[in-house]
Length: 568
Image 1 (cartoon, rainbow, N blue to C red):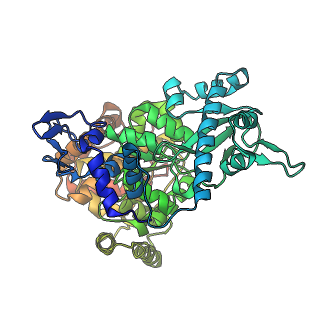
Image 2 (tube, rainbow, N blue to C red; image 1 turned 180 degrees about the horizontal axis):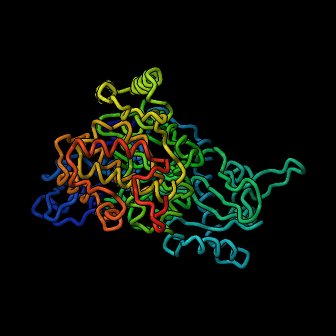
């Protein structure tokens, strides 16, 4: 609903901008102005200026400029009306509306928020009681410390007692029912606590108010996870779990990940290397994607590295593409098969998670490869179907300029495929005579891993081979996350800059923290296994060796030594 413009101006006059900014930035008065370090970019010398008299801020470093409302929107991820309501609360004013709201609905929503806040406190205290010790031990076993418990307000719902506690606070049965914390029995009409004997995860809105709960069963109760129902405070498709905490993490310039569950979000945030949010048990909705882009221009969506994760990745692509805007995108990361972010952090720590993030694919790369693996690209009709499928996805992009940019990239890749196909007298680009090269999900035997490593060693030493064998390289999969990340990063770098030589490519990859992976490829073990030195081959010899390796991947031929201590 519209707010009278004179009220907006009155708000700006009543609440000094320096008071609002000063909650986020340490300001120093300089005459009529205040100055400090800009909250919108990293700097060591203050270039951020606030002018109370005129009600604006300006950064001479990054160009950020605005008033109190725009500052709240940018720093707290609020929409316009939320920012107005926040300012009105600071000024002690009620927001006038052009059209009045339903008073009963307003009262119901306020009562629900009050009940949910009291319920969250009740559940938090449950971890300290005797019947909550199993829940406390479960959270401790999952690696959650006191800070994480407090930050996310985790708790325990006992088998009973909430209804009586809320009734004692003066809330009516109808109010508790509307808030979704109690239900009415179909058998005898009596009220009962909805959440019982579960670990509780309060779900907050973007202002940090509890609007719903997620709950995990401790025993064998079904369903394992249970959410609040839709109500006056909660619509599942519009909410992202961990929004408020993620916003704080982004102020520390951490990458933003989109995970699948509550524990993943908390584990990522607790790691200190990234921040995270999660949808509530469903695929990302249009509303949630819009909220994501208020937090970050390019969030990283994390998927399990199994067949289900690949299907989820494809669904996410199809949901994201129509919504793309200039400067608003996402990257897609595949986790090791069978691991979620919490598992990865436990086994490899923050460095392992950051490595996965650094290997995340752009939307165009993910679109291309997710459809490519479904086709036998040796067959002309299959290539045509693949091209048609990718073009069809690009046509779904709503924004004209973004759609044109994607279409240009796709047509360039198709042209490269055609060129590679015409030049492959020996069948390299689309698979050798033994059949099409198909991706492998399972980790191959040790001998095959060494062949995959040899492929990477060859393209590091001879980047000029990448455009010629681009499709074949994309379609093979060693099953080793680190090796695949190195290969993908090398291919991406060469496609962006075809003039890269071996030295330039290695320099680029080392800047991506892939030095250890390069060292493995150039180490004594690999030199002992390979019958050739990639760096000493000329271009033609290297091409023949790479083509041979691509045919051998997955087989048991003897390119490598087969002595007793070397697995086939």
